[in-house]
Length: 549
Image (cartoon, rainbow, N blue to C red):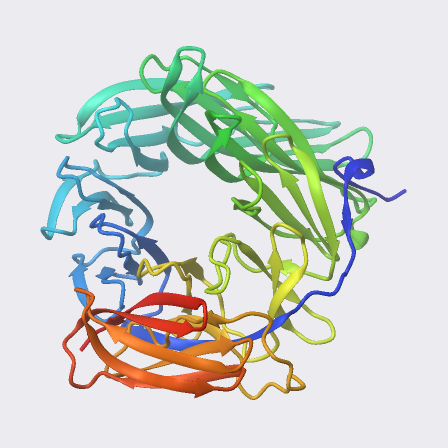
């Protein structure tokens, strides 16, 4: 018999599809850059710690560092062999963020600000499992952590465990430090009656500063993936799972959470005022000849010393062909009206949001959906209210923007959809940009979202007066400023420089209620940051814009 369980459904609030205004949006391209080869990885980080984020890209041979506009190449690595697994941290103590990257045979630590190589790891071989950088000794500099596993063999010893070594290289010299060991299962045992087969390998490693009995301290967490197969008496079956190895970064004491599932995400979190870590894990059990499957999606909250809370987000048991799809998740401050973080995950026909502080459900929205991105979007009109982007397939394919507080649809993009690779406020103007890696090659396009043009709104007047972010932004020479008026009246739209001096008046006089767009031609102005201010009756609002030539 098939069963599907969504948390404790007796306490879930189902969101009715009550009427609320749904805005129609469209993508507006504000930037584009091209690499000579297809893009393989995309990152956005504030490496200079100046609030303007840099764009980091890789292709099959190089790492590229661009400024936030995507127009200026700041640094390019030496030729590498498939650079990947990039990490970011201050590796040399200069207060700026550096880059580490793995390639075919080594791991390199780069200082892109001075175009130098800080350190190169020992040559990697078949024992390599994973690496990370992080501050293991609380000196504000990122150290290097390398995880290797003993050469892979398949001993016919039931319950055999292989050794995994965790080696620490301490910044800034990265001389080899101490090393500790953990063990993971690895065996294949056969007989005339059948066989049992278990393999577990390190998949990722992280350094987090989280709470424990001795206070907040650096902790090393290894995430593993495992598979188990059995054939013999009874039905043949297999299990996909994994575990967490949690160790103090100083004395290496710790604990193991085996068979908690393969880790999909491990992030730091504030749990009732304490620094902890949240993991989302997945377990699948499959009975071969019966085509029966059991899936569990589990959330765990851990400290440096123990598992403090756990909840089964979603359980499925039934024929494989009737599986209800898990369609993704997003974690963060999704409900700005409540303290703490939330986790929202999607099934084939619903969204479920839970409070991470209590591991209890907040709302369920019944809507065909597929979560597009693990980041939330902040709109220009309501930057403090996160929106969850999902793909809806009926009546047509579109992006819907779900209010994290209510579960209601706040906006939609019904056509000309773009791939959403990352959502970031790259220019620190309070409005998120959407970065889109095109499938056709090495092209990265940057978009902002604007009210759709050419949409028949039935002459409905806006519900409030507001000033939109100019687009494009940054811009060269010309930009469009849009604003909505809830009623007719005298309106002034002015431009100021960074010193607060008025340099232009784009409109001064009577305007009717509705949407208005005015173009500012800044051809005679120098590059820099400018303000524009809309005044209409008692309403007044200002925004920043950036002119780049």
